[in-house]
Image 1 (cartoon, rainbow, N blue to C red):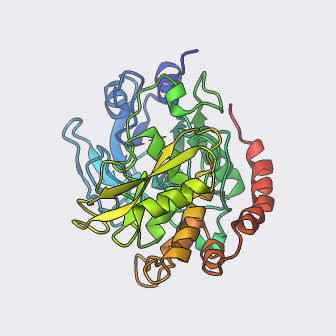
Image 2: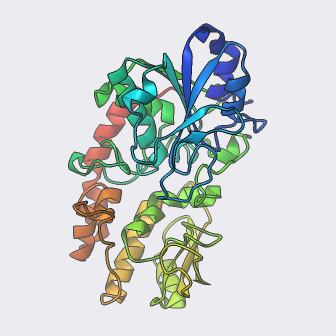
Length: 386
């Protein structure tokens, strides 16, 4: 069955009803239809749509900025429209940005994980729109690593941040539209929200099952394998290890100058973890951690993505590194003065770091997540569209 994206359903069935309204659009490079036409261009050219402003998340509307690089406001050369940055001095629309809009459309391909910043951007837009009395229309897209798998601890609300806006597991098994509906009700956003569902998508689909073109929404997640591993390998950002930024395999390569690559790969393979195989690698990052330095470590090869548990895999890796390199391994210092430790923000609290530092069995940590996951599943059930 052919999948129709929320964008396509909206343009074919809903757009005419917005005639006379002034609209904004939040989009990114992967905001395309099945023919790779951008939602920016499609909405700008639609005769019934008065598109007056654009908004860009992390990496920018056109994907030109690296991770963590602030993006400035500018005028889009293709459309002549102003582009407001949601990853510059502010992370959410200001009242001035929304003042002349009747509605704001969100068309973002999220990553299916809590710390993927497009999720926070969508929810922050909803919060700002609620305060401004601006309607929100969200065009749904596939959950790229399926909408059927849940993994990781729930976020402790005291650790809410741009990489974890609300309590949910790391891998939450929902589309961005489903999660927006849940957040709007359960987390009290209460904006005037309309989600335009897809047609033909099912929960067990990986992105490459959809027949849709894969366009990276992040420059450091260029492949579906990288996205599959990302629920776990992103935790490496909270350490002094390289997560492969500045290489051709970000979030698949993990290393540092002080690791015995062959020994570490053998150690992980000997654990018999499902769905993967590791090999030793040697790489020199062109930017980010250890720029220009030889790093040794491993590449995680996905052999069976349906049984792989990426969060558990990386916890096993961190456990091995802490045991083998106690004088070299370290948790990364806070990103900003007064901020919490990055590993705590990414994992959603202190439990992961404290458990690993205490060298306690991982089975205890993973078991401690289950009550929270079960409560989340009960809440999530009410908002599933597919």
